[in-house]
Image (cartoon, rainbow, N blue to C red; front, side, top):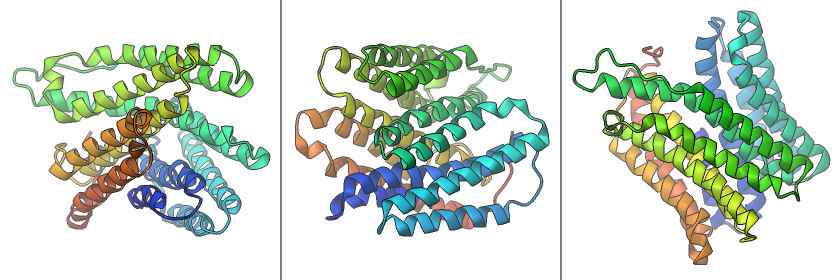
Length: 353
């Protein structure tokens, strides 16, 4: 369903509606709401040893999503109200699972969930679009947290496939991850309270530099031989480029901050969701971690969409809307084609780790 929302969000650019507001809502709310719900109701239950049935919670969350989805075509304000209820319910459910397990290792998860909920509520109260746009960077914090766990899986899988490296262990540096998260938090706070300050742009450069520092841990040929590592690496690289672009654009008054924000939104946020869809989809259906051909093409299409909207659009308007929208829609259609067959033919399985 989340992938279908991505296709819909890209397709609205080809309709005569108010596609700017609608695509923001579909991508930042509907698409990501389902992606987080699916990931957390799968992953957090394992991390907190939650054994109770989630069926009733899934029905409630889907009902709130569906009402919001329908209302989006009539009243975006009401649609935002119901998606805020969706986030509230998901937050409370996660709080309950973490509290029941007395698990203090998941506070980071609660932090970005409360951030999304808080920004959404404040947007509803104030009507200030800034708090809608800044949600992109809340999702960046989520990416930095979740991708750290994903990187452990990818690194371990890559080394397992290398001859003579049975005893090798890949341990990502959590200090770099924490520094990057702190930098993004500072960037958000400066945007909220000192929007006109040059400090915003220096904070963006700090964010980009921190993410670049994280990449050092992947600079081994044994890791780069595997496509899933390369894709993860490029996602982090474009995230860094996006922040550096925002910073230097603001300092030198190039007025390209929106372009680079879209580069982050597509090549970091949307790409990360695609990556987790593939990794989790394969591992929880009993498959080897080997991306299928259509999935690899889909990753390339998402990267091209981000480059088109974030960089090439500066040179020609044709790269601005319709090309990236078409590329994202096709990418998620390819994912749906692959994984419909996988999910149809394989039962859900626990994570092999």
